Length: 333
Image (tube, rainbow, N blue to C red; front, side, top):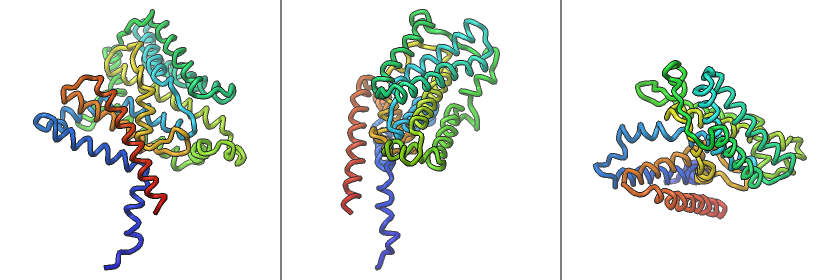
């Protein structure tokens, strides 16, 4: 029997997608945790509801981080921006009675847009590496959060008492129980996917991350591309922080201290290269989901939270190694 050439190319085409390896890992973890958790409760309505409720925030930050990584930079300050936006919105509403919509706009502007813009300017105009620049702003933004919250005091935030529709807009339930924040994740992921894969700016992002000098010779303003990517990361980190604060009704200044590393890890597990020029929104989503599935599975097994740190490191190594093996196999075909 003669197999058409296009049929023969299907396995190679599947393997060529950088999100293939993380898809295999994610499905493998789901099946594995289903098999070993008591009464196979890992795939059950309560667990799925928890996943849909808690995964959107880190996933939103991860896909934004992937966009920035593809451009050739990364941001260590996302956790601090996340906490700063939470603190600003809670202080404005709880302590000063500002309308929650206005408070959100101010928080997104000051913490998200301005924070991301400062990161971009420092990296592109002062020619400081994003590692050093965002390490510095990570401390600056976290310090600002602690200062405005009176040295780390948690701020209650209950906008739903007077503005129930506002709260439901961020973290309510729709379509028979789907958390609104998961819908936000879907919308943001689709918009960033369109931006990256189907616009001229997306091509500029890939070109900037692949070879900045070549991109400049093509007439691309690489500094502007990177600044916009930094702003997008800051804005979405702030937005995710506001969703979380609205959901748990408190702004905790010390929250999200490892979010920067989790976001980078999720993007890399999803096939994004730290060197820039390679990555996808779908891969980043699957990478972030993998980390959340891993966390939920370990909790259901009754293991220490510290095991999650070890397991995340192992997962990161396995995912990168898998991607490298696939790349080598494809290059020798």
